[in-house]
Length: 337
Ligand code: FES
Image 1: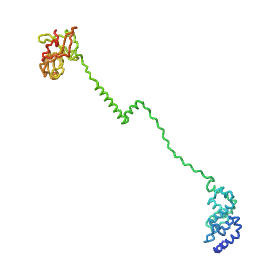
Image 2 (image 1 turned 180 degrees about the vertical axis):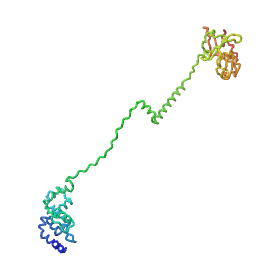
Image 3 (image 1 turned 90 degrees about the vertical axis):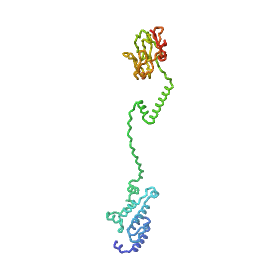
Image 4 (image 1 turned 180 degrees about the horizontal axis):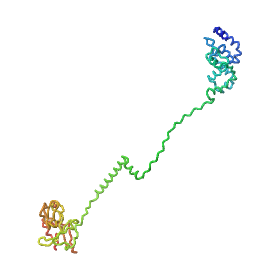
């Protein structure tokens, strides 16, 4: 048969196929799959006309057309109405190859490897094919649609737990807050300066009070002061010496102010030299107060002295007597003993 096909021309083969198809028109209408099988061996399928170049037994298009026709015929009305899942192209090709495996095309390029690997393939009937659902499931992996995968939730790193700082005493926190920031330091300095200014103003508004010893004070009876002596016990407290000596032929007691007549220093009584000596510029005064050396321009001054009713000597520093003015002759400047 193969030798005869090789000898026939294309026109002959086409004429034979047309005649064969006309003869089996009724059979084709009943079973398009049988027509497809027959056409696959001898002539091209009606849905896929054979190429003009030659008598190729079965191409991919032919197999697809035959399989679709077989499916439409064999499918139940419910399935055709959309109740079953539609077959994919791979399923249809697999079913068609399985069905056409019994009659492998001699000149088909796709059927040659299958014929070599399965030389003894037996014809597959429609009942041998698995249901469409199973084939779809085998191709897609599962019949039910896969639910969409949930996006992975990014892993948020966990912040390490903070260690509580050791609580400090409130007083220390307050002191630190006073000088911790420049703003607080400025406020603190301003408050301190304002307080100091307020205190200074209050002191300025208060009158100055000079606490001085009383101008009059009692120094005891005249018998406490021996003749020719100078009592210095009242010098530091009241600033006077009590002198018992002879002046102008009279034994008198008088009080001399311990103030140098030069520039106001405090002289010292030198008992060995029997004189008052000023340490500042060296002025010297006799026991009666007359200046005799140094820059002192005049004698020491006397203060008031009187004998009270109680027999006590009383000094009055509020009154002064100067020798150069002749005031030493005043009886208020001495007490006769
Ligand atoms: Fe006494 Fe100058 S103050 S000698």
